[in-house]
Length: 288
Length: 288
Image (cartoon, rainbow over all chains, first blue to last red; front, side, top):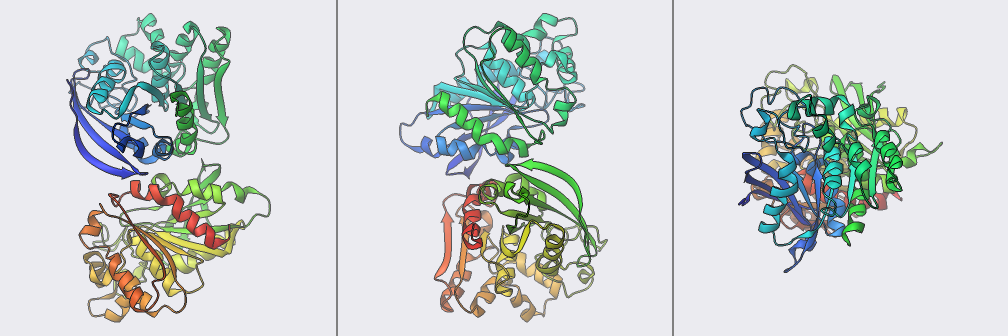
């Protein structure tokens, strides 16, 4: 039922960045997002493929629109980019805004099963169902049959898990510094304990890329970049090696390209440096 | 005498962004800046040309480093980029932090002649003399004989006036949405009144690109981009037409390329979209 309000239209790399707002039934709040329409989308009757970019902890859709440099490659390749928010905002749940790594800004791309977070912390349904359905209904220039996904940090976890849980839904997946094994790192443990409950280990595994890759059937192509100067990598919040090990053990590692980028950190300076590569990777799978 | 303290080293587009701090005798404060060293600067004995980027009102060197994407083109061409701050900070002058368009964040690239701003609002001397001298002394990989300048808004004013006041010092100049005729717009009038005094019309003219271009001897190449959706352009804060008219009347307009970019605004989305063009323009004049 969502219809979008366009709160701003900003020229960017020959296309348009739309700042959108809509009422979400998944989150029970208004949700803001940015949608980049490349120049190719302006042609009458055009259908451009779509890349969902999922942001990391503390971010809104603005951070990457401003600092991630995805529009550069997306403009060249003719790909629309969707930058959603990372959680509901303003649900008035006690403690919602207290921590940077739980609650607002930290939805972790799951549907909470534990009170009071069930009230609206349903970012899994929002990103996989409600938002794309609403977008493809409202923006006829978007091709709902050609969709890829990528993300950064918590959003890299989101990209990997949404891809692995929905075979065929996304043409490709890539990630920057993803939280690749959340059930074994402090960020993930805190989030899953809060959104699912401490004793829900099976539920936890359903949203863990390292667990999910073990179940994957068929070929698996993934591009992952991690900076060797990333403090969160060093603090074992990301654990990409666990993901690779699990993929290897289940015979799913052949198409995984994990690149360690020397000296890069966890910031948007890192993202911007490799955004073109990730857009080109998606473009290849999206047939552009 | 300045020596730099490196407060952070950040990998970016194959090179390094250094966050620097040094004691400035021009401003009587510590000054922060960012220096981007492209990958080509890492070769032993390398000498890379340098592009000074002057920021607009309210900015520090961080805004453009994060959102302007000059590093993308600078990495490809092998150009270092200097992102200075826009004013002294913390001089404890009464009212210094009260307005976004005067005082801190708004140095206007002039040396103040009016009390109490003479205490350290000497951004003209800082940018044209102290900072480059200190940089070329400390960073042997920078080629002090190949320097260009660019900037945005107040920094576009800075780039144009510093170029026009110092023939031969810069190999090229370009600007994004420059305040091209400050003596005839509200921002410029407020700043020059504050830094020079209301009755110092001759002094005002010395820092006005439209006045300076009338005096220019010899060929003049300039690249200027202005967005047609730029509200400050619409509000006549920028007045690029006055600059062109003055250049035409003095026979200096042949090499000026003023591009009106349809729909673009005054933001870093605009800058980012044309940063590659401005780096390429500088590169041509810097011989790379």
